[in-house]
Image (cartoon, rainbow, N blue to C red; front, side):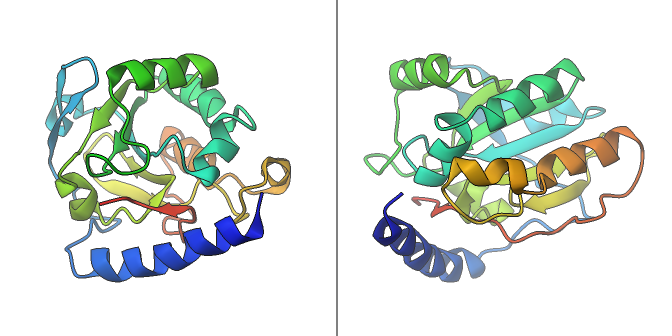
Length: 204
């Protein structure tokens, strides 16, 4: 991975953090903000419909090098998605990129990307105006939010502990997202409920 690309991503992320920072953001320990979004198949999904289930919100941009790390250079996220959904978790991938910006895939391109990477979310949602992303304070792709069965946000942050676009680091990293889901399943508090997300800035 070209270090210049990574530096550019982090520089853009700093600007994105400032922009999103003026918006109200979801807070761990409080009710997750309600929303309704449409998936790439035209089906509408309302967060309230999933009350009583654990829900994962994953902000995604298929062209971001840090997303590529977890989907194309490895099967890290598809594997976690499959394990989670098999356990009854609702996994919603959300793209809040504005139309015409990097990663703005239509349904056909998302289907092709999903087939290539074996992505297995419950649904892939478009948030073209960025409203939901800004309500949650989503800053990067990837970024993970976990909501428990009571509708409370219990995790916000990175997938794992090593802030790189190198897939070789995955095996050495602490998987924060998997740990959060394991804690929720066990009925325990999430030990590291807020971590610093890393990746490309959301393309609002």
